[in-house]
Length: 427
Length: 181
Image (tube, rainbow over all chains, first blue to last red; front, side, top):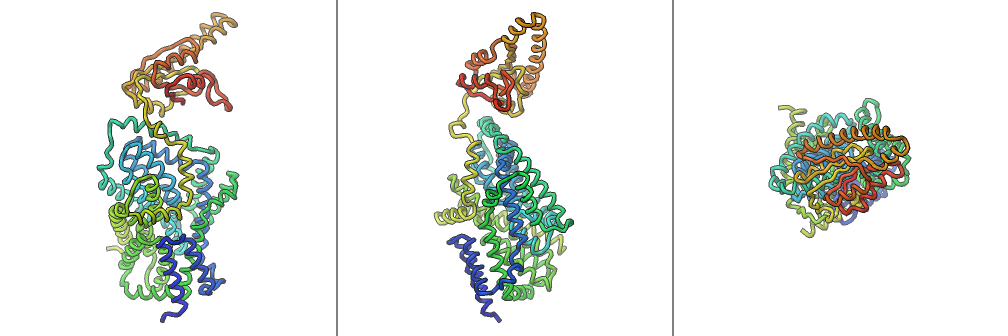
């Protein structure tokens, strides 16, 4: 029996989803309006707010954003981009391989949008120098970013949310998701190479000129503040090392990120006003709003009912792994994976009474993160790279992206789900 | 297609805001302009060395290796004015001592650079010259398409003056591309 409150909560949830998908208004505004209505109607009582507002996710994101904002001022990321470009020495295959690997590694530890925003201008510059079609290189960068983000707890927002909700550690993600991401990255580069090998050819007679153009870039010039550059590297390295041990230390990942951010602010003598002003507050409020909207579905019992219906139709753990993986992948290819994951988390939790849900967290992570590769609007990194390409006069159509993206999504999610299946379900 | 482009633009604005413009601005300092991308024809390269010059970095070798067909001239300059000063104050014996030391240093540095160039398939010509460091290089530079010079060439540099005044003079007077390392 559906109650009035359930209907209201569901209507607000669907309305916000529709607004997010339509892009008529900013997704943060949609989520904030939805959350305000939920609170105004007392669907989620004020005293229960801390239960639904996942502070671990919000503070982890805020901490990492602060670190990245301070580090950016040193020129660290431009340095990485120039260094990568020079290592490629103007060879298209090396550019494809190196930029994909560097993007995946950086995305595994920093947010995907910042990674692609910083690397794409360099990639476009190099492909212009090489006079080759930039599309395969840009697509590879997008896919590598989403795949790299899958590898760690802090790589992609869905993983942060899953880690926080399920109490999974940084090392749990490394053990379960990093091997999948590693294999999938090379599958992706292989598919891109096979699909676009014709575009990788360039005029040999121009090789010297291309090499000169790229080698003339000086990575040292990118360093705006050498002391801050060193401090940023040391702090980011220390944060990553601390993530490896956070569960043994009994400390939440958000605490590590916030400690790293405050330590860097103190050490670098950075202006807190400037560093904190650059934190993406819109994204954090988007998360906050979503947690409240999804909390309303939990509070009213709608999630429990849906979970009950699902578990009555799922007959085994293996079936659940496959359903969650592929449902998440196709959904994330169409809708924003952040609200999707926010909805799936309480659903999976509710299924815990009749199923072993541990493998389902990995299935959700795999589907939500890699599913974003399916379409041009599947993940924020895709939108950013396609958007930059448009601004630079490079047309990547929805169809162009879909053909390669869907192939890669099917291949990477297929391989990933097989690995999860073999690991947790067996033959 | 138009709908897709406007959807992407809207989403891009919502996600990236003005961050892309800021990043692009930072990159403008490094990227070559269209004009700079046109590589001048280089048939001859002059590499000037002296006692103050730093070791030629690998990036410079990489850059000049793009011109394997060009003529390369390696010049080591010894300042004639210094010899004159020593002769006037300390005598001929000290001049000889100084000259021997300088020639030994010149031989070491020229051989090192020549060896690395030969590894890259370039056969340079070598010269050891006594003269005015600025004037002579300026004269030679007019006969070459590309000049390679250390920022310390001609004199020691300080924190406030990271490039030697002799190098400044060469860059200002010579209308040719100059690689300063």
